[in-house]
Length: 92
Image 1 (cartoon, rainbow, N blue to C red):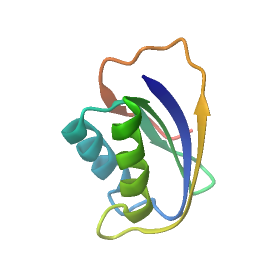
Image 2 (image 1 turned 180 degrees about the vertical axis):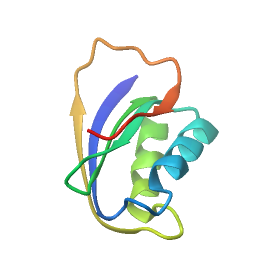
Image 3 (image 1 turned 45 degrees about the vertical axis):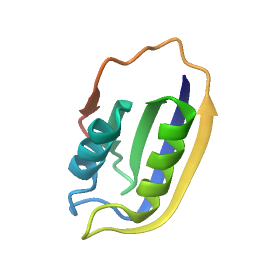
């Protein structure tokens, strides 16, 4: 199991990106969370088997139908947290 921290930039707020992310993550069996940032980016932490995480990273570059993803910064992180679901969190 691996955990990645993501920052997604571009037109990713107000275009159903967070809901789309939750839907995609649950469909492929990922755990973690996603939220909007006040600077216009989206932040996510995704956790799962490496193959599934890599698939989600590819999906994040495309995003929802209305989004226009400019960049996805991803970094593998060490985490003591073991997520049990994938959730949409409030904007910070």
